[in-house]
Image (cartoon, rainbow, N blue to C red; front, side, top):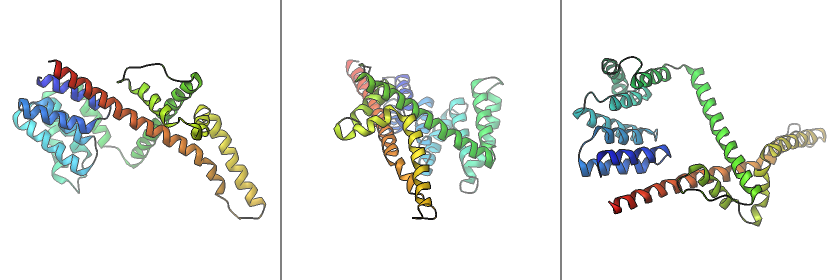
Length: 270
C-alpha cells in the first residue's frame, strides 16, 4: 500500500463517521511508510472530530508533527487553523494565539479565490460569531438532525409498507439504516412502534391533541391546578424515535465494518 491508498481509505471512513478507524489507519500508514502530510492531516482531523479536550491535544500534536516537516502544506495549515479558532483563549491561550500566525502563513500561500482561502474565511466567520449567532447555529444543527431523522423515518415507513427492503450494497449507508431499523422494529411486541413510524406525522399531531385534551381535562376536573401529565402521551413516540436513532448508529458501524472488510480483501489480493 502507498500513502495515497491509506489516505483514500481514511477519507472513506471519515465520511461515514469512523473516526477511531481513521486514526488507527493513519497511524498504521505513518508507521509502515513513514511521514506524510496527508496522513498527518487525517490523523488530526479524526481526533478533532471527537470535539473533546484530549482529542484536540492529540490533533494539535499531529498537525505540528506534519508542519515540522512540511511547513507550507496548506491542508495541515488550514486544519490546524480551524482547531486553533475553536480553542478557548482562557483555557488554551497558546493554541488560540497561534491562529493569527497560521492565518498570516496561509494568506501568503493561498491566493484569493482558492479552496483553502474559502475554508479560512468560513473558519474565521465561525470564530467571530456572537452569542445569538451561536444559538442560531445550534438551532440549525438540531433542525438538520430532526430533518435527517424524519427522512430516515419516511424511508423506513416505505419499506414497512412494501413488506421489506430491496437488496442494496453493504456500503450504502441509507439502505443500511433502513435495514437496521427493520430489524430493531421486528417482532409482534413492536407492532405499535412500527405503526407509529409508518404514520409518524399523523401520530405526532394526534399525540399533541391528546396532550392538550388530557391536561385540560385534569385541570377542569379539579384534580390538579396545573397538569403536565398529558405529556406522557409522547413516551411511545420518543421510544420509536430512539429505535430509529439506534438503527442509524448500528448502520453506520455496519458500513464501517463493510469498508474495512473490503480494504482487507484488497490488501490480501494485492
